[in-house]
Length: 138
Length: 117
Image (cartoon, rainbow over all chains, first blue to last red):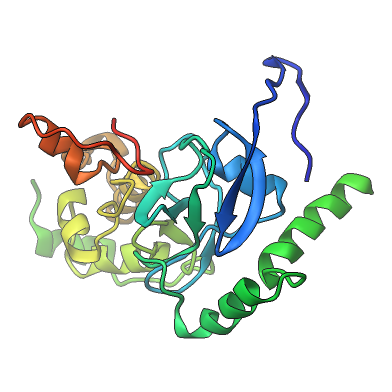
């Protein structure tokens, strides 16, 4: 997924310093100072957390820091709203399961495969990103 | 305030709707059907609803679902929305790290990851 380079109202997007951070153990790059959620979306990651009761996947909803649907475990601290928290070099970003970073039993296998296999990818998040890309091209 | 028993007789039994599994409160995962059913069990104010189903009690404190819940309850009770009291707002309105409160007492410690509002 690409960033918006030229917004009709906001104008040209500032390009920050490229920094690396980790997402569920994998190294990714993003711009310093941009919201963590943006850096994840550019990398095709749409799922930020799984809910406590139904274990449903959640991602960006309001994107302005109100709905708390995009919260993740950042540097060990849970419930960090990634849509308004600036990205910094070396940040440790983890998917939040309920209120912590420990995967639910049904997600554990996927999470482990994702962390171990360098070429593999998070199955659901990769699919979600692919759909959006295909829509753009068609 | 109205007589709850009279009101329950007036609105009749709970009638399922096709979109009752629609999620209203995203934080506490409460559906439209659960809220509607609760009204027929005698929950007639938003404050009671928050304690009964926990809708609007999650991380966002009802900022996303507050108005939706109010509208659903008002419709189910057959009263205008303006007659429904809104839920009490309490600070903090955003998730705040515990140490942010601690700083008020003069304790300084750099925040990790989170932001203070």
